Length: 89
Image 1 (cartoon, one colour):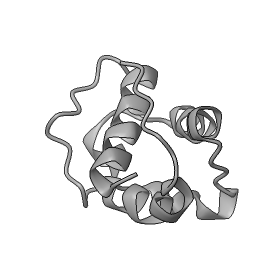
Image 2 (cartoon, one colour):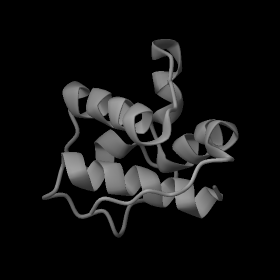
Image 3 (cartoon, helix red, strand yellow):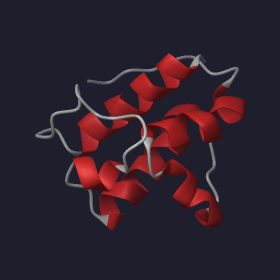
Image 4 (spheres, rainbow, N blue to C red):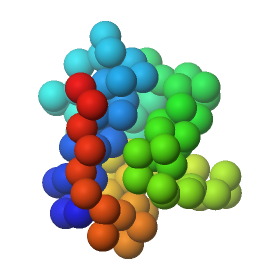
């Protein structure tokens, strides 16, 4: 997957978990929790959905890497390089 596809995949997962949030104008570098309403359970749901859709395991100590969209793209790039984009929303 490309960086753009990874960002699209993460946004799609967020849209599934928080359907009322506006995701179009999200900044790549600002923490997601400062841009939209995500609590710790929502964040865990994102991690679990990454595992379910893409078989990607994110260890708890690496959760901080997923704080921003850019962090998600950077951290997930090697893990999702051979994955196919699966959109639900």
